[in-house]
Length: 528
Image 1: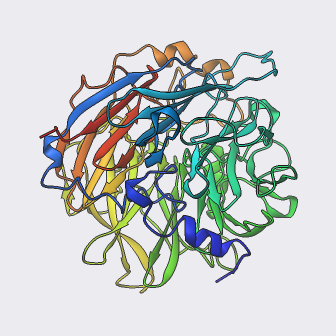
Image 2: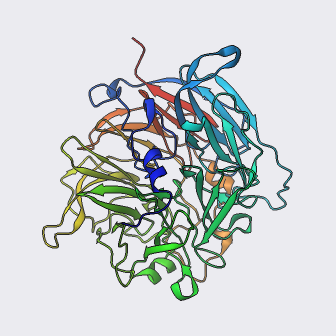
Image 3: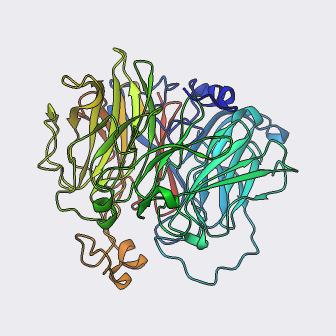
């Protein structure tokens, strides 16, 4: 195992269950597991009784398809002042550079903040580059601080109880960069960058704010020029030794020229130097088909080994040893699943998207959940349980096991959910898998199909208005985490509209989600 200087801090902030039912970062923890280990109220026996407890619409200017970030939850916040009390607060940031703290008990806005910027956007944004606040914030409970990145690329450190700035905002990434969910080790924050928005080179960036008067910023570039965006919505995952894990999108693969398209990588948390990586042997096919690594990695443990799971639009999952991701050739990982989705080889609306999740059940089995868009592939492995047809998408569940032939860890198929159009990353609590079907129009082009490599006309891309104007809505479901059986469905009318590239939070007996109408929803058990 590689030991880094920041590893002891990571053990404090990422490994133990979050205090008091918090959900302090995208995917619950630094590993992006989605496993709410501290949740004690919701379970398989009672989630069928969930109701929509409240919804709150906030003032925010949507940018292209984006509106609000995934929710963050901190319980027992000492509010002080005239309203001296302890409150559970839900935090969401908006694309229009707004930030809200909302009372988890009743949905009332507790405080709000408008980020200010002097940067002028001279070129209109679109859904690839919405040019608005995009990164889900992250919390340091020990410092009573929540961190967010505004449209102009400045990092804000806000007091959890008041929204006051702990110190003057710091320039971190370029203005209009497309930054993704923040992650943290101690006083060092990490974000990923994609699609060269704001003329920003894709990769990973860190900022050390241990001394706000002398900040240190580092950047790892996935390629010297354009492409290879790191755009899984959960940003980077962090392993137990501090390793930074993520995957890149379209670009050639030429390590001699430091070009790492379609590559899963690990960076040193102190220096952001590349430590190891895995690139599929069929990388050229993946590149020409525009099969970006669209999903965020999840880091998990199995029999004392740390493993990494990731995948993308091609429709297969990769399982890697965190300490030896691609072997000597960098093309040899532990296991690659058969094709799970995308028989049609589309570059849009099919394959694996969002991010993966993992938990350990009472018997010690390690589970992995994959949001899958489009119908299940004819080449998919034999899942013992299939919960009905799933033409639009599904959640696929696996356990990590030793392969009967190779003896190496692999992903053993367990179940496939019913239809989901289309699933966001799964959250797990007490053997319940919560999934938001976001309802968005996942098409990206006028004539969907195979990417015409080298001949694609940008005029074929759908405009924001074309993707926005549809009537489908998001819906929340709860599934048995071990069978995929449906336990709860919010129905088609609980949400005002659809959502895009977001996530859910589970904390203290309540589930939180957002949609394009800039509305935050709270589901929970009815009051006795």
